[in-house]
Length: 101
Image (cartoon, rainbow, N blue to C red):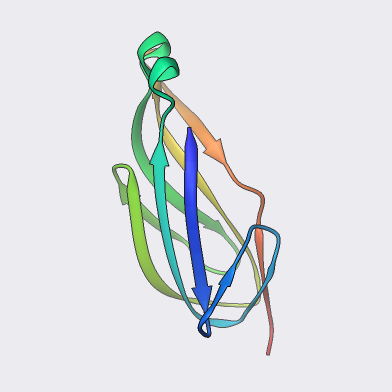
């Protein structure tokens, strides 16, 4: 499963592993399974979650689009769903780090 992640804060874009300033962030995520893999293993995306000490969020389906207040700490994104009929974690990112002001 490929995760297309866009994170902005203070008018700047950030990549995985970057230090993000504490405060308001905009996060959009789109999860897309590889078509061949999805057919072979019956991959179904059930939702996207943000977890960690900075903030948490969740959305059903293949897309998440939120604005949140990120506290000092870290957060990461994961896609959950089903593979071969079993609940599974389908993708997990490295963390973003939120830095205090």
